[in-house]
Image 1: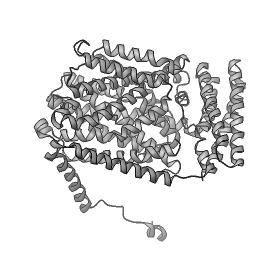
Image 2: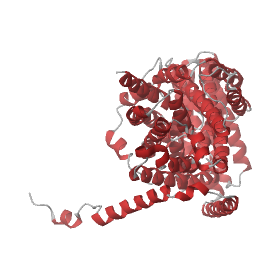
Image 3: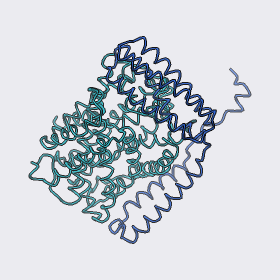
Image 4: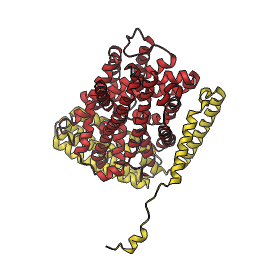
Length: 405
Length: 191
């Protein structure tokens, strides 16, 4: 019974914690510009994220180690240092994008410019991490994040043409704006397979003291939670395709997306959008800041744990403190949150090999995982999807910049 | 019922994956599997290897970059047309936001912020049109729509301040029209 409750709670938190600023921005742009044509990239990324999240949970449950410390111990510090530096920079950008999302939600609710919110938001995130336990953070923000299901409700209420939605599940070549099409496809992949997810998930499994008996629970959470979580992103894409695309709105600014729920919820739509964005980004910002602190502490062998008092893991607490304020500076400096988000999500896809290669090597180490090692099918799926995403990212990012996106 | 001859001649068997392809696919997956399980991972990336790999990667990225730049060379009109998208999107966006305000679905402060952001985009686009190498007729056509948008945005701001819903709606229609025309002009130039 305890395991069933944990599975249910895990699925709920996975669904509630799935959606973030990256999913919102990329889904809205995809739907607004290409209607249902980019649904395939969301499905493609969802398959990979299910495999990767399942692997990171299985690894932590069986080995009792989180990913970064296992990579350092088994593949060597010098091997891990390069990917670690790259991932730290990506974490900072993602954290900046999430803080930008919270600030924009507050701008919608108050009318005060988003830049003014950067510092107060940074303080709130920092206070939350300083005071709260891992369980409180994981459960509160993720359960509140279920508000984002309003996108799924709105998508159904719009009665989208099902044959067109189904056709979007198969990759097709664009007839216009090719560079933008591939750039958004890559950004969608990067938004779903955000590297912070794996470090956060595996460290969380260690914090929650998972053991081998949690392998099945982990599988259920990753498959069901990620699938339903991705349904929220699909909902946002469908709503954008039904509301923004027919009006010729291509989403060049977050302001253009804020009224997208008001066709279905005329009175509450605007507030629902702002609340969804604010809560989803707050949850993600907490996870990214923690993930960065976990990865850094585990890489350098420091004490770590959100359930410890900050004085017991001072360097862990210092890491997230510095990260939060550095990332808030990006928003306070006036960077456009939407452009920052799209760029960061595309970079997420480009750095996927740095995340997945060390991870796959560990997942095939029989000394660590015994009979819970990866099978050939999981290896093949992850390698193929990572190669495709990487090639797409390397080609589309410069193309998008040259093309003026 | 007999199938017409023409339809019959175009009918073909559905593509099959085939046993040979399945075997090839499985053996590819197994090679990846073997590669991942190989013991060389414990002495991966010595410093020399890293430097060579980084050098090759930089060269490969530079070559891709040069190829992309050479493949995406466009006429000045097409280049300008590509940069008009945010302005056209804002015209359509303002039209929807204004319309939603008249239906009490969004607050006034949000409309005001959107007008600020849209005005910034219109000003930026006007500047880039004037500085571009595009042909004068194309520049003129684009500037006409941008001027309509700027004027409608200013009138919408006044109407918003005085709570004039019909005034806001009128300007929404103007903006939506200007957005459609600008998109059409940009599309013609891109083709």
